[in-house]
Length: 184
Ligand code: HEC
Image (cartoon, rainbow, N blue to C red; front, side):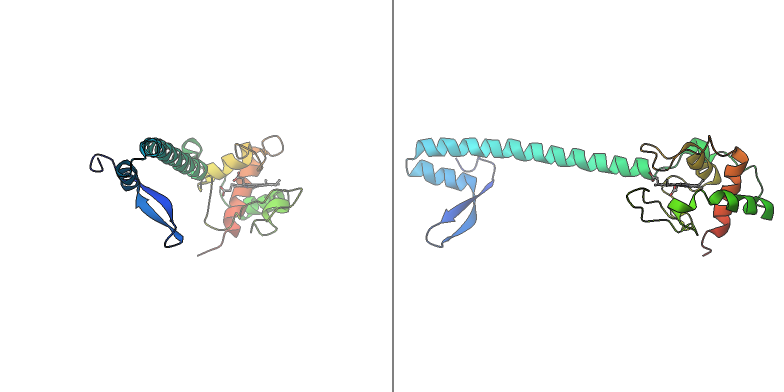
């Protein structure tokens, strides 16, 4: 009976109108039953069931994907609460900033001469600006220090510098980057 069948639409070709239009599947089935096409009606009921299963699967998949995407965005935009707690022990004196500028020459190939970021090429990855107020991995001195020292997981396009730079050098470059950041 049409009333017990949940409604679902099918596209059928209408030879009179010469076009497709959407009709409730229950109505199609009903008209088949009425015209005695029992086998077709049974098949129709099957398609109907498959349709519902498929659409439920699709819906679940979409929901799972959406969730995965949000989780990914949240993880990648997240800072590091532990690193955030670390206070910058090096005062941003002119000496520290000058020393940081020297260190920054190692960073410029990727992050740009003025920290503006770079589009990357076959050899070097695209690197974000360090002078805007967008920080993908945390905006505190402690987090920036951690990203420089330990690199940025998971693919480490931002390499760890801990073997090449002393902590003092890293804090100096943090101070330098802060000093060239765009003032609002
Ligand atoms: C080989 C290229 C390359 C070099 C050299 C490099 N970086 Fe990076 N850096 C990157 C890339 C790529 C990212 C983005 C990583 C990501 O988001 O996965 C990044 C990210 C960062 C971040 C995090 C930015 C944010 O938005 O949270 C900081 C801070 C940073 N780099 C500082 C430095 C400093 C300071 C140096 C020099 C000591 C340096 N980088 C050298 C490629 C580089």
